[in-house]
Length: 114
Image 1 (tube, rainbow, N blue to C red):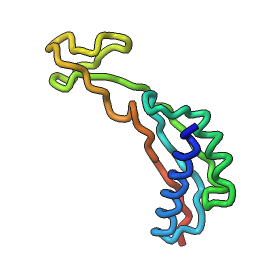
Image 2 (image 1 turned 45 degrees about the vertical axis):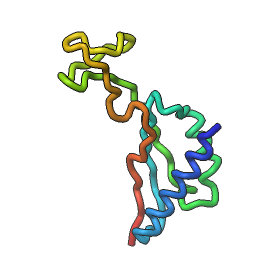
Image 3 (image 1 turned 135 degrees about the horizontal axis):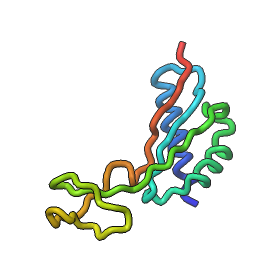
């Protein structure tokens, strides 16, 4: 369950940002989990609930948004249908995975600053 290591890194990053900005508290976090990121959103939520105790994130709820993997042609930008061969039907170029489909992204931190 690498989700615990990812949550640990997330909390450390949020703590760094909070210190940098002189924040008094963290009120909410938001992350996006790509379908092909290898991260299970439910395990990530569970890991966060466990790991946040005793940190600046202790009272901050976590919003997790799942991002579907989508593919498109890098030449003509034509979308590639889910389940289709990963080549463009129009220009025969290999498909490209669109942004976010394989990423874990810290999307938003809501801080209380003086």
